[in-house]
Amino acid sequence: MTPTPVVSDFAWRQIVRELDRVAPAEGLLVPLVALRPRAADANPCAMLELDAIAEVIIAAVLLVPRARQENRLARVSVLPETDDEVGRRIEAQVARFPRLRACAYLHSHPFATGRTAPSRGASGDVEGHMLPLWHRSRAAGLNTSFSFIACRGTAGHGWRLQGFAIDRSGRVVDLGFARVVANRGPEIDFALQPALDRQPIARALLRHWRRRQRRLGRRVRTDELFGGWRRLVARDRQGGAVVLLVPLDFPAAPVRRFLVTRRDGRAVERRLDGSWLGPEEEVLDERA
Image 1 (cartoon, rainbow, N blue to C red):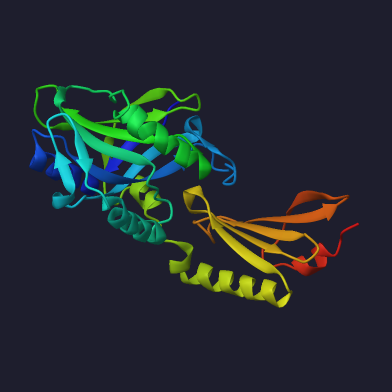
Image 2 (cartoon, one colour):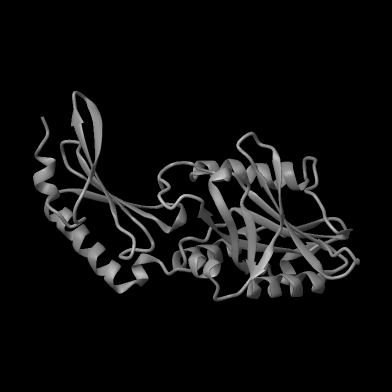
């Protein structure tokens, strides 16, 4: 199964205005997408595969400054050093809404009517953009990349947004046309959930847990995972660790808590039940 592409009404209006502005030349925007998994209990630490994604949600788009674009009839590009400026804006949005990811491209094929497809060749959509992005995404735990291409409607006017993805074999998969959804609908609420640090209850509990681990002499490391999950690893001097996987929906959704111990020179992991503020210091002393 392939994921369904959706786009917020606000983002779609921004896309149309920008593409109309540069038409009949090609236009581009930077989409920020959230990936809704099919399984509610999906492992946030595992590689995220294309067929495990239910929806690709374009919740926001960033405009590339006009003076930084080179728009032509069958090609669009950006001037050097644009990536740094756009990258800072992406980081600010992701810090605020950690389910968003810059794992997609978005541009137009104003010469195409009804439907379109990614171009091929060294500087084309597939080899030039989608495949390099796929390799970068795999390093971050996502085994795919996305491209959204706007074409003209079947009557030759208006716009339709068609989604494409790379599967685990490196082939291009057509996801169909994006569905426009309400700005305050469930898809966009899912995508734009604030970061844990912006939620008072979660922020206070996370701060308390970190301080407790440091008092116990443990080093704490924090990682951000796809889907807005946060992984906190508290290691002791003997190689053991307590690992917390904190969902963005916390406290409505439970924290997953694991104990990692060293036995016979290898790491042994087991799931812990009960409160995530429980007595890890006693549990870690159970090594045999």
